[in-house]
Image 1 (tube, rainbow, N blue to C red):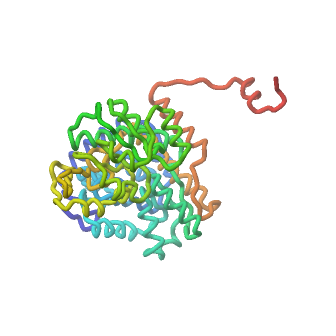
Image 2 (tube, rainbow, N blue to C red):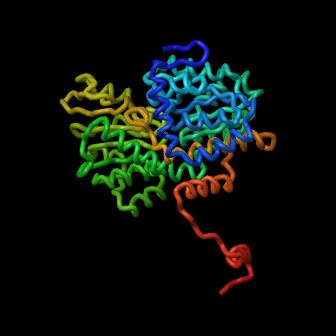
Amino acid sequence: MTTSIRGDVKDISLAARGKDRIEWAAKEMPVLRLLRERFAKDLPLKGVRMSGCLHITSETANLAITLKAGGADLVLCASNPLSTQDDVAAALVSEYGIPTYAIKGEDEQTYYRHINTVLDHKPNMTMDDGCDLVSTIHTTRTELIADIIGGMEETTTGVIRLKSMEKKSVLRFPVLAVNDSDTKHMFDNRYGTGQSSVDAIIRSTNILLAGRTFVVFGYGWCGRGVASRAHGMGANVIVTEVDPTRALEAMMDGYRVMPGIEAAALGDIFVTVTGNLHVINEQHLARMKEGALIANSGHFNDEINIPALEKLATGGKRRVRDFVDEYTYADGRHVHLLAEGRLVNLSAAEGHPASVMDMSFANQALGSEYMLAHAHELQPRVYTLPAELDKEIARLKLHAMGVRIDTLTPEQDAYQNSWESGT
């Protein structure tokens, strides 16, 4: 179903169900609710045109509603072709009046048409998950740059791309790396990615993890989370890394650590979470055992060399379950790719639980307010949200959970800020 003015969604009649899901998620997002109440009163984003390229989920919808309450003139599109919840997209258009251009399963042409449509909004501020919006502005929509105050970036992969742009002196406006806030990456990336990735693998395959060999490519915050959750369900976890410090940490956390080419012959399940290219390459694919499952929880599907997999699959490819494609090698082995190599947790499941996205999206909301207030001071660089705002989100979350903590006494505060005291 297409609405010519307010968005492009699969079926507007799904809106009522989408509204129920949005309201259900809101129950787990108390920090964002508190910010929404303040935003509605203070209108810190009044008159600001915002374009967002985000995963269109019930949690994102609550962020969008908060931004609109703060006065933002907001339009949205999807940041991944398979991550959209169609009923939520319909509800955003029909129930909340937020123009949304997102259809689960949209092809590449539609995906970039939607990006350009939200850029036709001529934004003053961008909100990205993967840097596709900012990248498009800097390549084919440069006429928009003069009106852009700044942007926010949600994910590790997007921050990597932005820092590359900064290093090469091509970034034309400041961007807040929301991903780098402690209350984002320490919780969203670790607990959110960990739980939702394992959830998606189980939903799409119905396999038992206990006793399986589970290989995690990358031991950043996302990799830590995936490894921890797989181990907790009884899997034997192997970690592959290129960073010696992270590899050492994985070893001391109790996991086996080895090169990916060795792990390829041992694993039953493989998950990539690196933000890099062809982490699982042809040489890995060629060594995999019968029935191996491959999934990706990094932002882009090029973490897995899918063309190489198709080349090896001389016996053909078939869809054996929703989100499970079976590739048959010449020797009869079968290797299974989940969710076409795209973000498995958002494609084959519902993405991160609302409780953890509460903090991530509180960072986005506060980030947009901060960017508007401080853009005149900021250069075309990648910035992190100030630590005091990060800590405030943590305080609000603890308060919502009914958890109280200690505070320093005046004596302790003075001691920590002195240099005279010694042994």
